Length: 225
Image 1 (cartoon, helix red, strand yellow):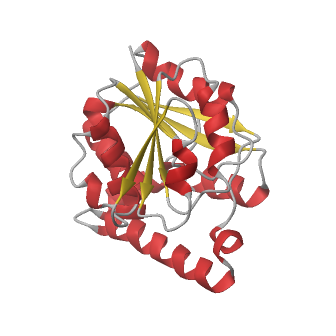
Image 2 (cartoon, helix red, strand yellow):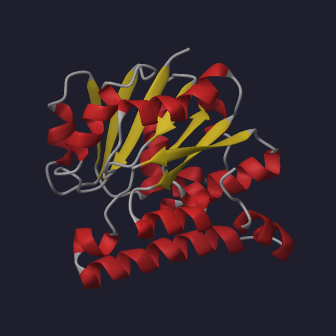
């Protein structure tokens, strides 16, 4: 069973290489697809320089959901593992642990939850693990998620919402020592705050779109096992 790593990336030329090094060394990953989501820096060129990495350049920014969808459509591997392009502390072992339950057929989807990386990101994922960008999933199930390509930063919430509705088998995988920079650190205080508010707006839109209060509460009660 082949496994493809799909890495959506927007202006991540300086942070992408360390992620690619870890994913390339993972024993369960057969293919790597980096989707540069309308980046205006050298993200696409950096990805192309790595042997064995397939680099896609989207002509305009589609948002994270659009980039993930483009990467999945590029491959026919039965198992997809999604990873953010700005991860710090990622190792090949983390990637394999995330993939293995889906690869073995024991889970339909895994969710990677930061542990012991830094306090801010640990707390955020402990409270809201369903927004984790690190997850492995059966390709056919990802393509069933309605409007996933239009969900932008709400894409992880959209996937988890559908997983609950369809009763997927979901397994949580702690990623010890992994974290990522905050948006304010990457973009500066003002631009980072604006980007964060846009992310929250995308997530809120998914949560409130046609959901009952009880089902929304159920979504927020997701916790690491």
